Every structure is written in structure tokens, then in C-alpha cells.
Image (cartoon, rainbow, N blue to C red; front, side):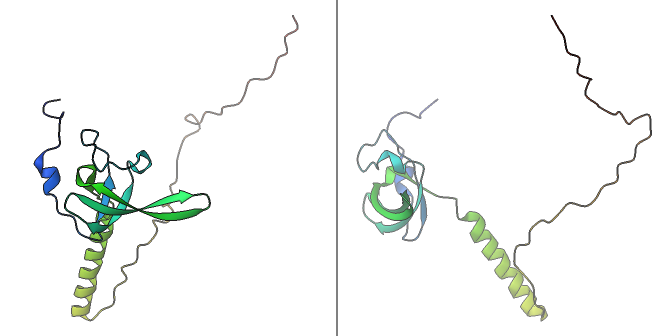
Length: 144
């Protein structure tokens, strides 16, 4: 593809990260400095430290029967902002708006998510001609 090889563009380095942000670790092989170990490629973590060229990222790793919180410093070229939290933040914003509107009207509203539940019943109508009974063929043993 056109202009995909070589070093990453400047917009990769201009992204602003803050402590507490969710980031995805996606290794860019054109930048060798600050490259994380291959296990962490494709993992998401939380920023705990911000430096000039790198970010401190806290990632969970399953070791045996427990989860360890690993802290790594990764070059910005190998990180991108994660979208894993977008749905949650949107839901919080919507529910807060619903609560504000309900408070103005003097009502109480439930903002809890409800499971979908079972589907509505359906009645299938058919005539005798349309119904076709499927039965297995009788077993016939062949003696050769």
C-alpha cells in the first residue's frame, strides 16, 4: 500500500496520554527502541507514568493460578489509545442525563441494565399437505 512502510508519522507521537488512560500495546517493528516483550503485543493496560518518549503501562498477566500486575515502560510508537472503555463511558453519561431529567420532573428512574429475557411465543399454522414427516429408512442387512 501507498506510504505504509518506514517510520511512523508525526501524529503517532503527538497523541496526548494521561495517567489512568487505557492504551493498547501494538508493537511497531520499524521502531526498535522501547519495544515491549512479545507477550504484551495486543494487550490493553492502564497508564501509570508519563515520560518524554515512553509511557508506564500496567498490564495484568496470568501466572499459574493468579493475576499479576506487570508494570512496563513502552515507547509511544508501540501504543495507541484504547477504545475498550468507550461503551462504558457513554452508558455512564446517558444514565447521568436520565437521572438529571428524572430529578427535575420529581420522579425516580432505574438506569440498571436489564437482560433481554425470553423471546415472544409464535404459533406456526400449517395444513396437512404442507406437513412432511421425516423418518429414517428401515435397516436392510446385506449378506455378500
